[in-house]
Length: 289
Image (cartoon, rainbow, N blue to C red; front, side, top):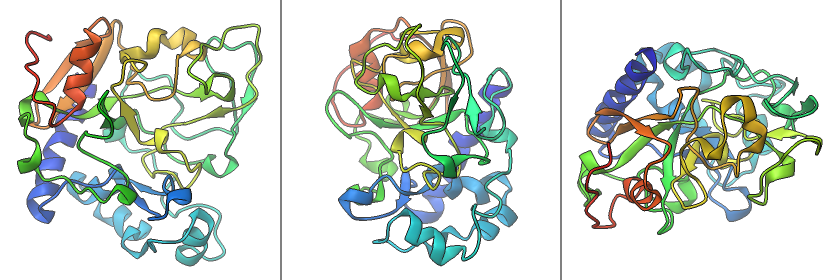
């Protein structure tokens, strides 16, 4: 119930944000050049003033982000002499599902459940940042046609552009899992293959600590089913790094663009799942709950 309430609050915050700025947040705000497109603050930072976190938002000062610099240059300009974004270590209850097994902040070393060994993070700068059990809907089988995107893609979506209807389009989904560098090709990692590193740890701050858009968004493609064909105890065997994922048995909770919260079974038809991610596919969803 608390997880559902979190999603409900985020859905309301998206509506308030869109009303204030006439568009939804971007998934990653920061670099506007291709080689650096996965750098920047995440969508959750944009929502901070709308979840009663104005002081934290002002402390972070994301409005000062240069648009054409890489991660290190952005960081050093905004926070000279510091090693972390001020306030980035904050654990925010709105972004944490009580059922999640992820620590409150990114650890330096962690054992992905089901892996035969502990492993360090691939991105040391991510250590210490507050984690997030929720990500945006980023793309469907038809490409990046969901509601929140990287700033490079120059698509601040308005609710009025969601032609499939707000009640047929995903906004934010649970995604409480971590992947290994041994399963980047979309193949399962399975013991006894050791985990060399862990990566893609979901953080609300964005990609200052890793430069990976998988820290903030998911996809609904055919290789990205809910719960990634594994369980919290077998997370190491996730088939890729783009899935919705929860610690709730049998499925994930989501909030649609109309603000309604739903539990979606991990056995949902994959075409239907894909269509829920798309904001403009024109397909009839049919019965999906």
